Image 1: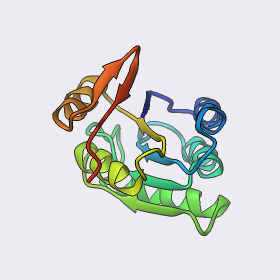
Image 2 (image 1 turned 120 degrees about the vertical axis):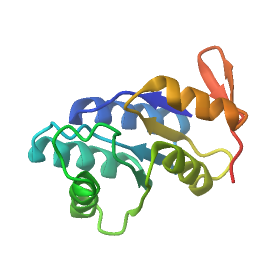
Image 3 (image 1 turned 90 degrees about the vertical axis):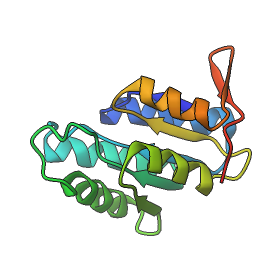
Length: 144
């Protein structure tokens, strides 16, 4: 599992390249993007994810930063489909639901990227799911 605050196209492309080079297999992204980014930047970020990941779970930040509920999910979904119409993506109502869905979509050895708004709630959730930190790496989260 990879946790990253990547919130722009270059960062998401770099993380995608890292995941591909490190694991070289199907991958899942649990994705949120800040609502205060312009639509073109949100779309470019989603395009980078679509190029690198096979399955995507989309959730919205708690702080919508001026967006309406559901607006970012629609924008990200549309942008993913522009690049890869066949990409599998699912919406989630919260970070907790998104991480749980992301783990469920992944086979046991598949890498899962979690892009987060706040790190501590993600770490707490992963701890509740049984993940352990090993040399800066989280391992062993229960997949449902």
